Length: 391
Image (tube, rainbow, N blue to C red; front, side):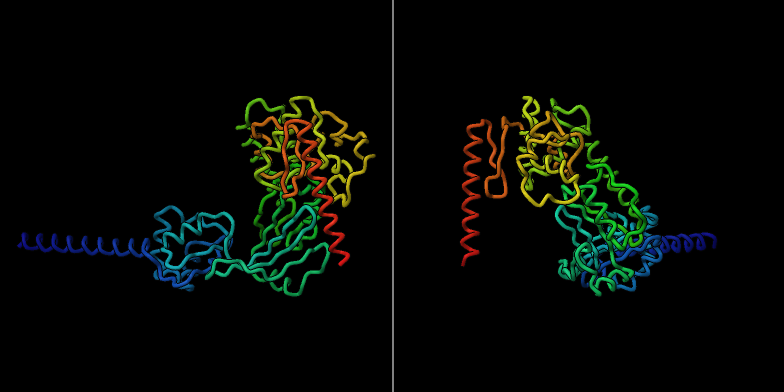
């Protein structure tokens, strides 16, 4: 009798184990296998969201078939407390595991309606765009310059939507004064800015913010990112550079940033300035002279006068030796890298070549030929403009 009971109990135990194993296998397949999404969706992860609330949202959007499996998977993967605020594109057929990875990886939001305030060197623009999950393409809804026009009625509606994302993007070469001036008109931000940050202390980059974020907090993040980039590049800088401090390298990076808009030229431009410093030749860079006149408060709007090129100021690199005393703008990552990893050349000169880039040379004779060629191009362009205006 006892043998029969023991045998039946063992059989029941084996059956229960088999059932449990089957349930576990089914649960795992549900977690890692393709999900029910027929089309991509935008997944909004709210601040303070929990895995429980997210699983409910996912069930409502028919992105997962069984919420408890998602919650168990999040708990056992150790990611249940790692949800990152933002709006993310979830592809069709995404598994629960993939969705959890998207929601916990963070980074820049990739989906939904976005207000992007682009602060540029010559002007700023507030752009509203929306990502179509089906095509993966952004469609611009409206744009305007807050300094030149009132916000359209449509903008107020978009700004009030709870799912709208906000971003501030700084162009490479923008000055600190321009950043502060533009941020004062960002009506989705809060708080005052007491002072203009030191020139070169902000990193041109894209910054995701929330409505009502503080302006000072945003400036602090811009400072921190710039400090991180400069520290990393300084630690890995090339040998033999003519800079004693990271701050001097930052000044060089700002000159490089202002001298060329062609990414592939930055290291060559840096090499010209480094070579001139090494040989004790004055840098003779117009953007520095212009900064001495404008103090970074907008564009000069005209050519430099001979009297300005002769006037001795701390930023007139035609008169002073070495670097100017401060950066002349906020350089981007690539300009900082170029200043600390310049190309190995014997170039001492460069001039515009008519293509948007520059012609580089090692001797004054070669440089003079390049200058003459550029003057010829300028003259031809003026003639074409005159001919065009006369028709």
